[in-house]
Amino acid sequence: MKADDSGLDPDQRRAVEQRARQLLDRAAAWDRLPTPVDDLLEAAKLRTAPISAFDQGVVERYIRQIGSATARILKSAIGKVLGILDVHGRIVHIDPTVNREKQNFLKLHETGHNEIPHQRGLFRWLQDCRHTLDPEVSDLFEREANNFATVVLFQDTRFSAMAADSDFGIKVPLKFGRKFGASAYASIREYVRRNEKACAVIVLEPPEFVPEAGLRASVRRVDASPEFVRRFGSLQLPEAITVGNRLIQCIPGPGKRMSAPADLPLEDRNGQVHEFVGEGFSTPHNVFVLIHARATLRTTIQVKQTGLDTPSVTVGF
Image 1 (cartoon, rainbow, N blue to C red):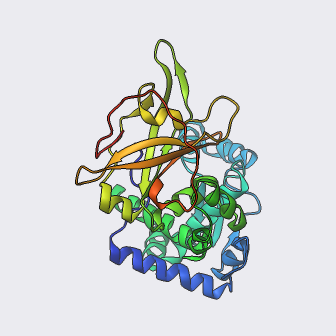
Image 2: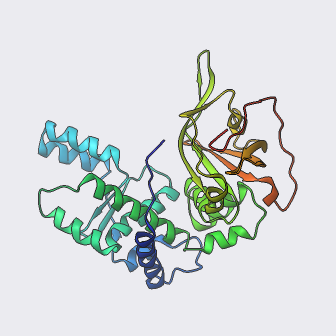
Image 3: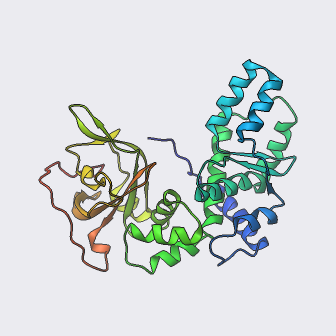
C-alpha cells in the first residue's frame, strides 16, 4: 500500500488545523460553497502562476538553455509532482492537466506550505542555498500540508456535519464533495475519517484482468473511522483483491460506476461477528469500497449474496 500521506500526532494536527481555520477566517470563506479557493490564496497573499512551470513550452525553452543532462533531471522532477510553491515569488504552480477538483486541493496544499510558519521559513532558506530537505522532514511537511488542505477545503467540520444529516452511504460524500469543489477521492476519505459510525474505505487501483487469474485490483490505501479502529482494529489486507476475496464483489462491473451493496461479515476485537455492507464506486483512477456496519443504517437496503465462503477475520476478509 501507499505510505501514510496524512498521519500526524495530536499536537502537530492541532497546530495545522489552527492555521487552516485562521486562513478561513481571513478569507471570510466559512459556509461559502464551493469553497472559494482563489479567495483563500488571495488571503494568503499568493497567486497562481499565469504560465505554469508545468507548461510544456516553458519547460522546453528552459531545457534548451540548460543542456540535456540537467533536462533529464528536470523532466523527471516535474513528472513526480503536481504542484510547486515559489516562496520568494509567492506564486503557486499547478499542473494544468489534472481536473479542477484536484487543482483545488493542490492549490490549498501548496498554500499550506506557505501558511505553516516552520515550513515557510525553511523553504525560503532552502531556495537560497544548495541544500535539500531531509526525506523524513519532507514527508512530515507533505503530511502537514495535506491536512491543512483538507481542513480548508472541507471548512473544518462543515462537510462532515452536512453529510451526517443524510442516510449513510457512498453517494453521500460524492454529493456533498461536489458542493465543496472536492474530488471523489478526497471526499470519501474525509467522510470516513470524521464519521462517528464504524466504517472504512478501501482505495484500490483500477482493476485489471490477469491471464489465468481473473480480476485483480491492487490495494492503494485504507482509511477507517475512529469507531471502526476502536472496535475492529486495523484492516490488514492482501496486496491485491482477487477472485475468492469477498471484496471482489464490491468492484463495479465493466461500464458501471457503482456496485450493488454486498454482505461482508466482519469479526470485532472480541471475536463477535457483525454484518457489514460493502459499496463500490469506480473512477478512471481508483475504485473506492466503503464498508459499514448494517446496524448503523437508518434504512434497510438489499444486499447481494454470494457463494463465497472466505472466512471473516478481525484483520481482513
